[in-house]
View 1 (tube, rainbow, N blue to C red):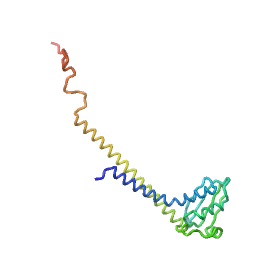
View 2: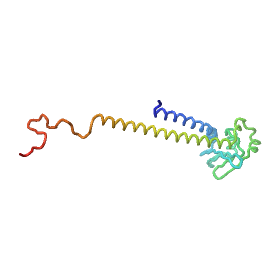
View 3: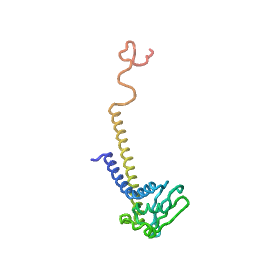
View 4: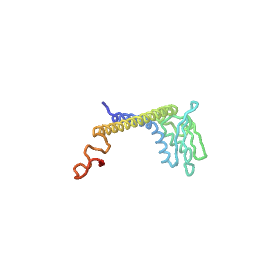
Length: 192
C-alpha cells in the first residue's frame, strides 16, 4: 500500500511534467526577448495575442538609446517561433506596426520552422497548458496538505496511545511520598 508520502511524490512529478510542458512553448518567446536584449534593447517584453482572426506579436522595450524599431522587427523575424499577421514594436511612446508581407519583402523569407505554428494556436495552447499546470499545482498542494494532516494525525494517535499505556498522568502514584521516613505518617493526624 502506498503511503501519503508516495502519493504526494507522484503528484509532484505529474505537476512538474505539466509545468515543463507549459514552459517549453514559452521558451521561444524567452529566446526572442534575450536576442533583443543582446541587440541592445532594454526592459524588453514579448507577447502574443489574437483577436478577430489576426495574430499579433508585440515587442515592448525602453526607447532611450534603443536601436530603431526596424532592428527589433528583424530580430523577431529570425527568432520568434510563431506565424504572426502583424508585429507591433513599441519603443517608449513610439509604436510601429509591421505586416507579415511587409517584413517578408524587406527581410526575405523566414525559416519554415518559425512559421510552423500560428499565434492563435500558440495562445490557446499556452493558455490550456497554463491551466493544466495551475490545476496540477493545486492538486499537488492539496496532496501535500492531506499528507501532512495524516502525518500529524498519526503522531497525535501515537502520543495518545503512549499516554494510555503509561497510565494516568495525575502526578499521583501508589507509593506514598513519606513511605520509609521514620515518624512520618501517610495522612493528617487525627485528633483523639
